[in-house]
Length: 244
Length: 292
Ligand SMILES: Nc1ncnc2c1ncn2[C@@H]1O[C@H](COP(=O)(O)OP(=O)(O)O)[C@@H](O)[C@H]1O
Ligand SMILES: [Mg+2]
Figure (tube, rainbow over the protein chains, first blue to last red):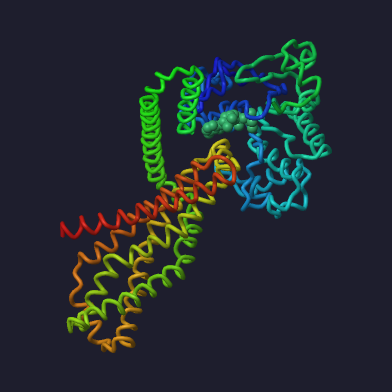
């Protein structure tokens, strides 16, 4: 479980998050919906302890990580897998090297064990035959699947997606979204999905929080979104466009 | 960013005043201008000192990561190849051309005094103490510094550095420490190479341009060189290595704002590290020569 309690964050003089509280339960898929630049990626980085809030607390599985040192954070972060917006694959490494990178870095496993785990992820992501290619030679959807495979390699129980469908064609988007919902069914995995596309929310999320001008203006099960009164939510429901 | 805000505050105040169309208020406008300049200066100073603090912590963490060199020996080796072996041509070219130029010009000058036999001594001193290490430093800041700035900047904006942290790897130990260590190791032989090439080309020019016998040239070089000449020259190598690597890596890590941001951070890395190399060159010479 991940909890944000009254979190506020400023970049310089600009207040990005104002008193944001959020709870993400295990084994559920939670979407965070909001226009670009509102601070959605920032929320994911807070959850991983990559940045510190100005006030408030971030709690992961009952541990307050707000003031934790970088070194003690490493083990907490491995409970969560992160899929970055631009995938953040290492572009000088092959696909299988990318998948095995953090196993080699952080766990003292025998090489055979690493190869086995990498092969497992290759198969899961449907990338057989692409093991020795560089990320740049793959399509957008494939690269996204490599990034998901990399995030799953430590067997996390929560996975964080930053705009999982951004920049993908509609078919690849659907594929990625069904992959996400199958993850929960087969592996009991919880997920946080940050997005500015409202279709994604209805497709996979159990519950949704809407972030608007630094505040959470809605936080409930997805179906209730249709009943929300807030003018911003009404406008995105009617034209489905979040660019403001 | 702060600068823009301040400017807009000033313009806003100005327009508000003129809207009020009270002529006596325009009297205060210079005052307002000074106030806004003052604020701007204060924010800039604040940003400067915060950046200095960040840079200091960054450097400290890079040095504290040295125990991990065994784990990242492969990265250290890669970086040593990049900043060492791959830089040999550029260092050779610059040292040879400056060595030759120096021999010609100084030789002409000494000829006027009838002291051409002193050419070996004067070129040896300037090459070993100053030009050898300085040229090496400037070339490496352009070659190694720009590479670090661009590579790490691109990694920063594509969130690869965040990804390292998110999966539990210290990016400073993985990316900066190997570069720093490689530079500290490789800059010494590169300085030696730069000195050697500079002197050889000076000797060549002495023989073929000024018609000085090589025996006389080298005789004026070797017996007169004192240990402190080498200390000055070779102490610069590790100093430049730290300046170039830390400044360029720090700027790469601070890159923000897309591809343009990578460009800015790369330029800043080169400009600042070259400037600091020139300044450090002066102070190392001054301090060592005064104290030895
Ligand atoms: N390191 C930073 N320094 C200053 N401003 C930042 C930084 N990172 C993000 N921002 C700003 O914070 C706002 C929110 O960023 P982000 O969380 O990436 O938005 P989103 O993911 O919702 O598009 C943006 O306006 C962005 O410009
Ligand atoms: Mg984002």
